[in-house]
Length: 262
DNA sequence: AGACGATGCGGAC
DNA sequence: TCCGCCTCGTCTT
Image (cartoon, rainbow, N blue to C red; front, side, top):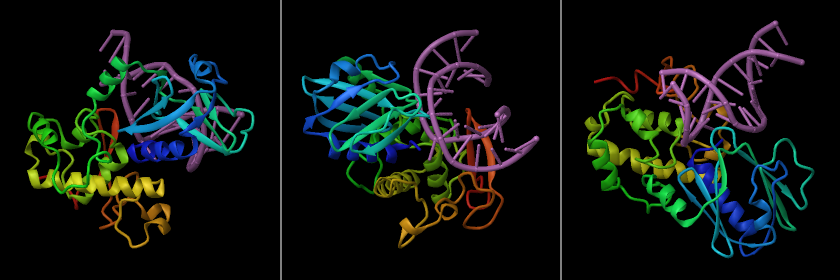
């Protein structure tokens, strides 16, 4: 579920449903101890930064949510049913109920904590204006790295919001060997990845799912037609068996024909 | 019914 | 580099 597109979509939805009015708040599971202190406060805004969500409440209170690998939201219209499973945080008004379960983080964040969080995130393609060039800071950071470009793309301090699916699909679309050292990636290739990331993430937010192939009607694509290499047995474009490897604990997928080593 | 792996990340070693 | 988190869809038995 959660790469940057999911987080931005949740921010947009939760803002539309809850912002500008009081919301009830509780922690059915009990592990979000501050939930009760927020009960009845007005939710003023919801923001997304990379894979992080910030919920703003009246009185300058901020809640930080990070879904991690397992976290998910369940949404109900109107008054929700009894919590299903372990619900860390339930937020609701008369029209919607949202249950958060399994997050890596669900916590009050004070201003220094928020500054520290945002300081360790690189630029988020979804927060930057659409551009044909990558941020200079990203380019300079990559120049200092000899790790594979595939590892760099998952480093949230370099670029915030990409996960394992977008990494695989972006490198495939750019026809780049995932093991190319980051400091050997030519600037035009970085710019191509950046602008492509902006486009794909925006589609992801709109459709609430990752679609990484070009299509006049991306919303109609079947599951097996949306991705070219991620978790596939063969490359969607050329039918070559997809290569897999473990790169610092994550499975890397690529097509050795479309993305040859130089 | 049970095993396994997953779109993530921090901390221990 | 590995483990834990704490959930669920998919696959195997």
